Length: 142
Length: 184
Image 1 (tube, each protein chain N blue to C red):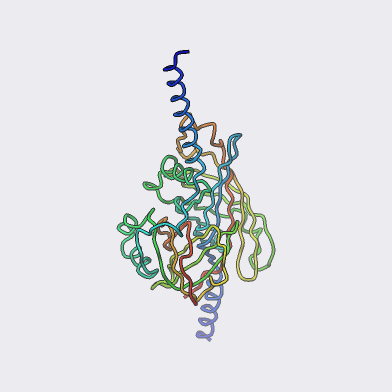
Image 2: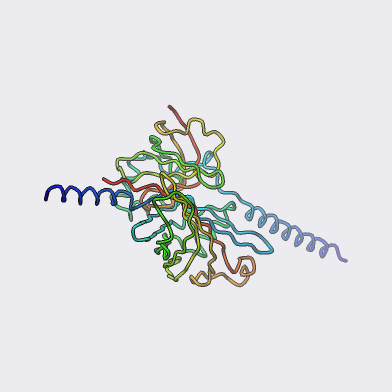
């Protein structure tokens, strides 16, 4: 075999290997850890809910799929299926809140109604409440 | 006497109206599909649902984007290629408990129910029927169900290359913890 064919084969092999590794990497990619992510918007729970109540269309275009850092008072906490947890934040409305879903929380001691929380989540949109997913706690205080 | 009857009627009405509707905004719906290559699994913990025990009407609403996958890429494909969630953000189910008389909402216990109704996914509506249970508790109602759907029935186009990777039928799990709707 001529040396240049050997080199060519080797290059092809490297490209194929790179492709397989890249595909495996993408395939196994986990949802982003929002603790380390930079938020697109920082807002209070009351303003966030009001934005959707006032004009769902504009708010949807602005916030859906974006990382939102929300601050507010915890209204209620519910544990769900498979270690998940939903935290509702108080807003200006009695009927509608900001519901934040955590898929795993290591320390839940201070996640209680009445405490102040700052969290990050990805906005899914608005049903009766504004919904945030894949949430991470940034700061919590009594 | 007239006044007494009026009061009685009003109090009866208030009493029954109080516990007619049950609500949850933190319901769970998950789906699961198994193929030789991999399992496809997603959870949604933000399901809104209202149950009216006087009529048996039951309504579910979900945002497609609230489904959470363990793999980021799978979630992206689900939203962009299959469910087109930017264009069609919501999925709904509107149905009725057809054997309502076999549930005694005044007596705690678990009852078998059959729910018939319209499932709208990806802007396509199909009639479905599902078996489930209703557990009547002192402070609420828990509802659970498992049934299967076929993505193709909802015009969810799966390209040939990955067709074999995605299960023909998906198992849907529903789990709700309803609380009485506070009356004003």
